[in-house]
Length: 253
Image: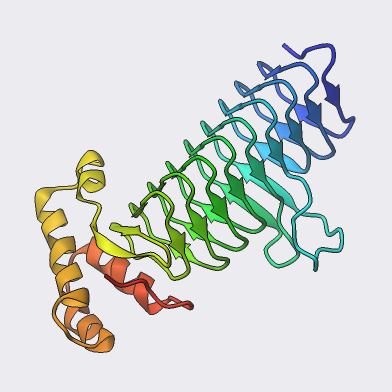
């Protein structure tokens, strides 16, 4: 059902079985796929919203990026199937650098959170209340950001990582880790998160062993990586690849 007060741009594509509430504005070149609910007073433009999403009141999706270099290039936001966007969330579309901002499938963006231009989040990501994600940030699958987290531009958050409330993150956070604090540091591993995702105990032990080599053994980072190089665990190899590809450097305990 589309409320009679909603405004739908002539270039927008609204699939069957979509609900759009009162005074919502669906702007240019927006696609809303079936099963999605858009509550009243939302504004969307230059966005592709997947199946079975729910976008709550006063959210703004796809407005121009807050980047002074942006010159009106044609860019967009993509939101994956099953994602929930709560009240007063803002997600800006991309710039010429990447062309799009991507939110994965089955994510939860809690009230008043912000995702800036050219960010990429994986699937099953939770972004807590009032958290701010600067431009070009990458967040891996199943990562959890608690409330009032701030992430510096170009930072990467590894899969299954968890950021404590109020964390201010200026360096990359390795997969499976917990980080917290102003200029966030590592505070161990997200054991609970790994168990919830049905990782085997042997796999968790492999990750714990790799963490000890990287951060507790007193080896240099290069020597620690060399020691782990032939570890057969795919989870350990993910950590190694993440560390080696870091541009900003990795947070440490």
